[in-house]
Structure formats: structure tokens, C-alpha cells
Length: 362
View 1: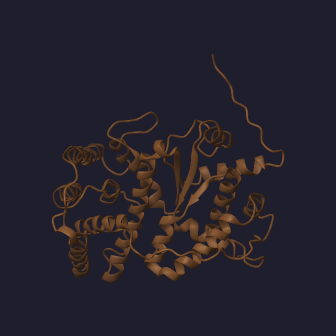
View 2: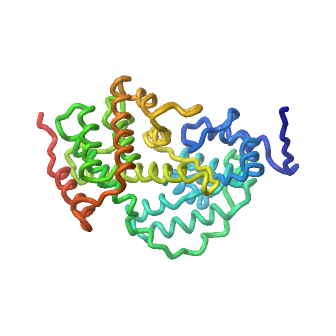
View 3: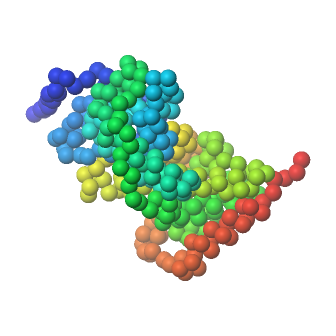
């Protein structure tokens, strides 16, 4: 026997507008669901209501700085300053989240901002984001997103919070070490497949297995990688090269938290969607959710890597990563070789190698 489920919405609910926003966001390439979506799409209004009201799922959007900063900026625009394209995407996402009761998780983006621009700048922007998140009803944001109004009415910033945002996240520091090692391998005269093999061996022998960083590397070392994954790595300005590696470590950190959220989704009854306007991050994010074998509508990691590698190399790289994961799981965690100061020691050594590298002449 088959059944059917019907929903009733408040007559004032802007169904057509919200459905249009959902379709626009879903096809933008900026959002990556950390779950297998229904056949009608992960931002379909009925599918979301079914998941929320009947199945009890909480839906969270983990947004990166590209979105969070623009949401904060949108509160300060006036009639003479229309939103640019990046701000408009942020307004669309905020409007949809407000209309459909989706939570927005901005935490990583403010740690990233504090790390780059300081605690004061991050706390100022956080106050404006809180104003955006809590101020203005869904309809006001919807109208603004469709250009029906010229500005948002938000009653100033939210109270300034007290938080230690500038303290580096332990997860980021670990990912930074992994990103530095990826960068030093890229600068060595090795074949791409040898770079990945050496990275996995190093993670197992001398560091820790960082799955998201390894997947990032599997794409980065390929000949078809997206642009700007590590900006300026081979440039003459070596300080900018290190800055590019730091940025890559933040991308890997988003991938890390997405992976954790997905693995813990059943326990917390929470489904997570990553929102990013970084093309490379959006391309890599689906891969960190994949396993050694196809699962329902998802391919295996090896199959997915064929977008960047020849099929045999893709399978070999995925196999190396999965084999390492099995060994680590069987053996349990091991201490780092340098003891308590290992992270700082590794960072200093690897940064020095990047700073010392010089582009070939001619």
C-alpha cells in the first residue's frame, strides 16, 4: 500500500518566490548537500518540510566567508548602493534560509576572518551578521533579493560579542601542516602520482591521516585541477606563496568540518549543506563524502577522481588513501614524532622550505 503526504502552508507564505529562490540556489553550483537529496532536489520546499516536520531533521547551512561577509554587508547597503553579484547571492541564501527555517553556521568564517584581519574586525563583522540573521523578516529579504526594494531595514548591529576568535583552531593548524606538505611536494620535481604517494606515506609515517587534506591533494596534484587552489605558490613573492597555503588550509578546514558534520548527522539529527562561492572548494567538497565503493546515488571516490585523473590513476590514488585509512583505524592513534611541540616544529620547517624555494630562471 502506498501513501501520500500533504502539507498546508500559511496563505501568506510566498510559495512561488521561495520555490524560485530554492531552484536558483540549487542550480548555482554554490551549495553542496552533505546528504543524498530526494529526487525532487535538496532545496525543494515540500522535501524540506517533509524532512523537518515529519522526519525531525534540523537543516544547517555551513557558509564560508564569501557568503557570510556579504550577508553582513547587505545590512549596510542603501538605495544608492545596489548589491553586487556576490552580495546578491548572499541575500538570496539568507532569504531562503529565513523562509524555510534553515540555520546558518558562520563559525569557521569568523575564525578565518580573525586569523587574517584580527579579532576586532571579526567581532565587528559578527555583530553585523547577527543583525542580518536576526533582523528583517523573510519577506523583506525575499523582496530585496528580487529587486523589489532598494534596501533592508535592520535596526543597527547586534550587541558586540566576546569571543576568542583570533586563537587558531586546532583543526586549522593540523590542516595547515598538511597543506604545507602538499605545497612542498608540488615544488619538488616529481610526477603527479608520486607526489600523492609520498603525501600518503608521510601522513602515515610522520604525521596524521587527514582525509580531507588528502582528497584536496588528490585533486590538486592532478593535471586538471581547478585554478587558484594554492595562489602564488610558484611566484617570486614567497610570502604570498605561504599566504596562499594558509588560504588552502582554510578550504581544507571547511572540508574537515563538513566531513565531521556528515559523520555525526544521525546522532545530532542534523543535515548540513556547505555554501561556498569558491569554485575549487565546491568541486572538491562532494569527494570528501565518498567511500571506497558506490553507495546508492553516490559514486566511489575512485570513480569521482576520474574527473581529474586517468581511470587507472584515479583508482590507484583512491586505493592508497582508503588502505591508509584502514591501517590507521586498525592501529589506533599514534603520537606525533616531535612530541608536544610537533605542530610548531613542522610548521617552521615546512614554511622555511617554501620561503627558500626560487622559481627557475628563464
